[in-house]
Length: 230
Image (cartoon, rainbow, N blue to C red; front, side, top):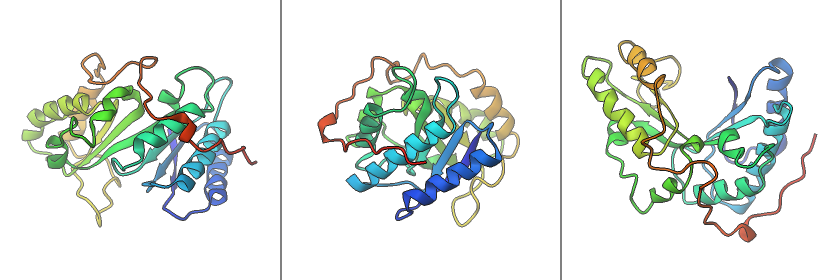
């Protein structure tokens, strides 16, 4: 279970860290934080991400395992891969490859129809297959709840492997201004979703295993790690 922190552009790092600390003070049993509204593109943003990532991992860490930090960028940005590479090099985790488990990225947030029609091998998306599916999450809304879902969810499961994401949440709720994630999906979608993905296997996924990932970005171009502040 994760705490929720809204992190729109321009929010001071100190404000975000304070909210992370409040979650920990109230619910120390949480595993980490889900940071929402986080599409970013600049070097300054990357340095801020790093400071917040380290803080969340350290605050919710237990023994040799760091806490979890999930970033919802709403999908791909021009700098998503760079951020993943740089944060991998500076990861706070306790063992090699731990960042694949402890920092994750929402690489899709959109409608059911858009999800089914996304080309995950296009020039904008193909790089995702160089990484473990454990890094990536997909959020799908406006899915039908009628009988067609029982067939349609099977194709969503297929697309999930094609999109190289380890986790997905599908809801019948519509997009903004509706509170898209304000309730669970209606049945039969909810029941089918639980049944299908409780038996999920990564064997057919397009991406790589942890340890064989391709980090193509030049780490010398990453900003220096930001010291933790408490």
